[in-house]
Length: 382
Ligand code: ADP
Ligand code: MG
Image 1 (tube, protein in one colour):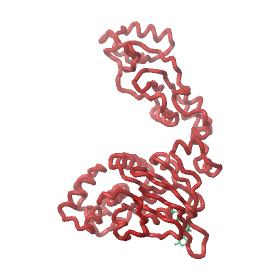
Image 2 (image 1 turned 60 degrees about the vertical axis):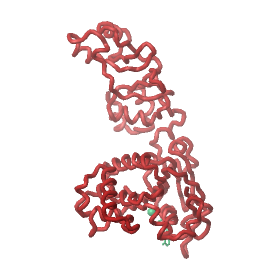
Image 3 (image 1 turned 60 degrees about the horizontal axis):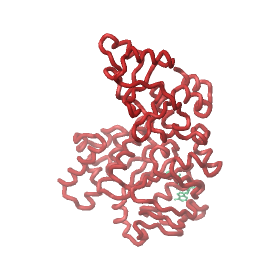
Image 4 (image 1 turned 90 degrees about the vertical axis):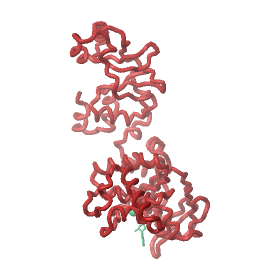
C-alpha cells in the first residue's frame, strides 16, 4: 500500500534528517515509528503527505509515486492527526469533523450524518455536534481530531504523537479505543511516538529509528525477544520481562501441569475432602473430557453448605483464564494487577492443561520487573 524506496531528506546546511530508508507497509497494517527526539520521525511522516519533499528516493502509494499525484488531492486522501490536536476554535465540532467532506463538497445533511456516525464510534453523543472545541476536555478534543482524520474515510491515516499531550489515564483509554477502532475500520495507520509502552501496545509492527535511519523493524514480540543491538535494548528498557528473561515467554513454560480438579456432580463434602488432601483452598471444575467449566473455593462452600449439595450448583463460571500460548508478560500483568491468586490454563478447545499461580509468577518475575525492594513488597503481597 505504502512504500519507501531509499528515501533521504537533507535540510540545507545540516546532516541528513532521514537517511536511506526503505520499507513496505501493508494495507490494514498499524505501523509505529519510534525513536528519540530529533531522529526523523516527523520528517518521515510529513514526506508521506508531501508537507516535506524527499531529497532522494521515492515514496509510492498503491504503486504510484506520490510526486506524480496532485498534492491537494493526495492530502485529502490521507488522514492526519497531530499532537496539538489542531481543531479550529471558531468551528463547531461538526464543522471540525466534516472539514474534508466539506472540501469534497458533500451536502450538509450528509456531513452531519457522517459526524454523528463518527461520534458514535468513540461513544460521544450528538450533543457535541454544535459545541465548540474549548467546551470539550483534552481527551474529547483529541477524539474529535481523530474523527476528523477519519471523516472522508481515507484508507491511510498518519498520526504524529497524537496522544502525548494527554494525561496517562485518558491516553491509555484512547490507545485501546483507537486500536479497536482500527481493527474494525481496517485502516492503514502510520503512527509516530517516542513512548515504547504505547508502541508495544498498539503496533502491528514497530520501526525503531535513530539518527534518521531504521535500526530495527519487527513486531512487538520480535523486538522484545530479539533486540537488534544495545541501542534497541536500552530503548526497550531493562524492566521489560521478555527481554530480561528471553527463555521465558509463554504461560505453558511455567505452568503447573497438575491442578487440583473436581467434577460438577461431586458433593460439596467430597470437594472439601479433596481440598484437604491436596492442601488447596480452591478446585477447578472440569467435565468428563477435562474441559474447564468453572471453579469452587472453600468460602463458596462455607456460604452454601445448607443450600446446595453438589459442586455444580454453586461453582463460579465466570473467571479469568489463559491459553497455553498466552505471553507471560500479559498474564503477569493481569494476575498481579487484579490481585488474582491464580489463572487456569486451557488449550484451544478449553481443556484444562495447567494452572499459573500468583506465587509462581512472583518468584519468576520479581527481579526483572520489580527489581527494587519496594516494588517487590507490593508485588509479593498475598
Ligand atoms: P522527530 O520527529 O523524530 O523528533 P524530526 O523529523 O522533527 O524528528 O527532525 C529530524 C531532524 O531534522 C532533527 O535533527 C531536526 O533538527 C532536523 N530538522 C527538522 N526540521 C528541520 C528544518 N525545517 N530545517 C532544518 N532541520 C530540520
Ligand atoms: Mg516529531
